[in-house]
Image (tube, rainbow, N blue to C red; front, side):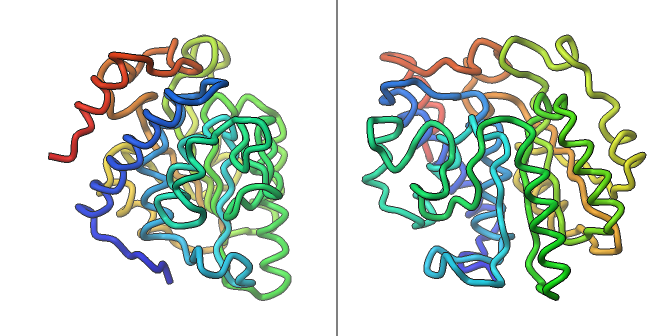
Length: 276
């Protein structure tokens, strides 16, 4: 059971608070951040940690806890802001993001950050490990579920599709793959760099149950995730998002992949994200 179990309206408010944290976090980081990727996934990760996942910051080693893997590891800043908001570590750690010897490095590191389950950053690694964890859960008769968030640009990595073959073969219906489909990656539009569409048909061809949602609409995210069935096939949720969602001058702009707000931009972003 999730210890928060927030309503849709409460989740929306929480997501806005996390977005404000992201703006400040990246603005103050000595090594920058990935603002666009952090913001696109906020509603998904907020829904998971504050309603969907069976896990608690009070028992990080619960053997039956659901596992979350942040496969798009470059979006670590947004992930950390969610973990801090949920109480996995003190919020006073956030200003140390990417500083020397910080417990919040530029990509998730299990040995440093409470709540992180897997070291990620090199794209295409999260899903293969998630498949292994799902197999282990099946073999030990555990009811835990394995959730993994991937980027759509990340799906150009062949390791994802090898993992998908294994997941379908072993009927891993305890595995939930969420594609943060924001249509942008490091150098531009995904469809122009390495087109992965039609994603729904590809996943179905690999033997998956496929659902789609509006990934920056909290009700759509929650209703889709809560509506998933464990019927002998892995679940894939294609979450249609906007890179930089929530801040008008960042949203949908390729240059914000590795750009951070500075000066007046911080004030403008926080004004847009005001909770009033």
